[in-house]
Length: 181
Image (cartoon, rainbow, N blue to C red; front, side):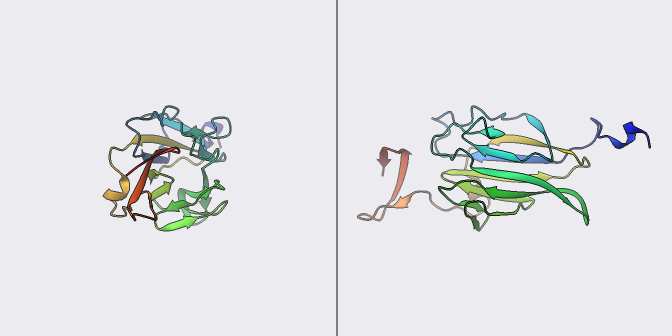
């Protein structure tokens, strides 16, 4: 078999993870300055995709001190029964849970990523949609910023914030030192 027939070509349709992100403070804080918003980026399927605040150890970084250095990872895999590239999602944060739709993942716990999933950690919400493709060794990632919480669109909205013991009202933090009611 000719080498050019076995290698992926630029014409191969790459699987893509479309990641739509939202944070309630995104209009006043530059949280996504290190993300390639609106641009598709190609990734090798054998390298894990990491998201966190540490730009050296993560594939993509969020500019937010409340995000863990390594927040989550996505791992591509294949099964003998399917030609599609599939993904698992893993919580890398020791500080908090990672919610995938209605499931909660603790530190180092992982699960299969559904074709469309609502991911939540801290005040961040993401919708990750997997688009199929023919390529076997690479996939693409594209980030978009949402203007409304995706949980509202998916009818999974939960108010953020923690009830305050003396008033019972939700508390929304602008930063770690200031609380607004």
